[in-house]
Image (cartoon, rainbow, N blue to C red; front, side, top):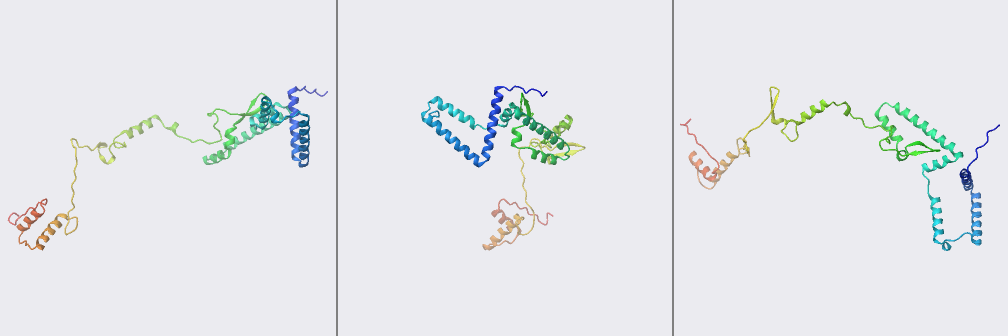
Length: 283
């Protein structure tokens, strides 16, 4: 004997009827001729209801009837999310098999992707694989879950939401010992390596001991430098100044007949230049 069919509840029968009616309308809309006949039939039905007074216009409705009509219209315009669609499909026996089939397909695909990812060798290949499998839709709907009779998507916590297919940056923090960290810190705390302390050029190493150059009780350093040379060039500024001063005296009509007169003229014109004379007797 064939097994008896299970008695369906009133809700299941109504849902089955709604699905069948929806599928019938979809088939009619695909045929242009039947679609036009359906529109004409709906127009005639609207005119008959309007003549009988069973269909009210907006201007003839009270506030309660108008709000009920708006609520019904808004419910029709709501687009179901994938989660809601799967829940509705899972509640109907006719479509429940299709939902289970899709869930099995997604599970098989997920296992195959994990197996392919495990066979990748280089980090570059893993990066390319992660970019191909990532996207806004994958981030929004993460995985399948069982909820009573429905199979739907689930949003999970951020810590568990990290995909195992996307490679993460690898660090060596676990390989560095505490002794190595102490050695590095001690190295940078010394004066010759510190950014705010003395530099390497300010230290002297003697017998494998490094000491910093320090001059105690010094408040100010000065440095005077003049390059020596010969001729009229800029470096020999003392000789050039003396010669030009002597030339100016001769050009004015005076005469320099001895070394003594030359020293006197230079001392008068350039008091900051000090000249010492050494005679032959002193040599």
